[in-house]
Amino acid sequence: MSYETLFYTVDGSIATITLNRPDALNTIVPPMPDEIEAAVIRANRDSEVRVIVLRGAGRSFCAGFDFGDDFAAGYAKELAPGGRWDPGADMIYTTSAFAGPVPKFMSLWRSPKPVIAQVHGWCVGGGSDMALCADLVIASEDARIGTPYARVWGCYLTGLWIYRLGLTRTKWHALTGEPLSGREAADVGLINRAVPFAELEDEVMRCARRLASNPPSQLTAMKLIVNQAFENMGLHSTQTLGPILDGYMRNTPDALRFVETAGREGVAAAIAGRDGPFGDYSQAPPSEQPVRSHVISPEAPRFGRK
Image (cartoon, rainbow, N blue to C red; front, side, top):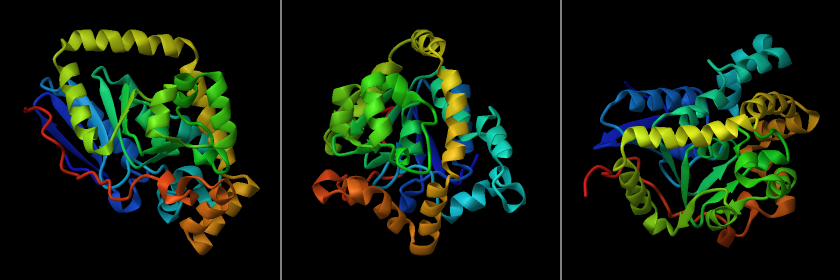
């Protein structure tokens, strides 16, 4: 099986899914959500695989949905049939368990086999929604995790920021869009662990091997009981509402001006207009951004061998 947007490899009992659009910071375009789901299904059908690792090639895990020409071209048929945004078509597509990106990301959550997200660089917008679907999230300390769409052009999608952080902290980030470093995200409990970038792959490898040493049925049972508790809290309902609101927020006058600026002056100009007043994300001082030289090779590490 071949993929356009990712690499899939297996070494021993560990399957690795590597997002592979490094020149675009692994931004999300069709068919990435479908390919993630396909790779997760593939890993679950392989009796030798016990753990899945999700990572990004290049200098970022995933910088969210690509809101440039690739997004418009990739989703136009579903969201704007006839060349004009159709809120009904948007709702049908984004909430469909068979088509929408959020249900595809949630294959990570539904996978009976545990998933570890290895996060470095930018993990923002839809990229953060994706990463938080994993069971465990381990990040480099200098990573930046956030939802700049809280300011314009979006809404929480998977809802897992809400369920992982709780009311008080979620409200802060939902209303300000303020990002967290990997270190801060671990300290507040959004993710599991943060380590220096030089130790990231080894730390993920140790964790994957540790999980893989447990009986598969035990891993599945423990994941199932935890997931079921959160689903009983209304996770599915939140994930139905989130993409519907996201559709509206992508088509407000402010959002349309944002996308028009990106088309006319470039994505960097649109982002500068959005984040410049706050001095964060790419508008932050270099010391408050991911280190640009921290790059992950698309070649998966040898998880199955010591």
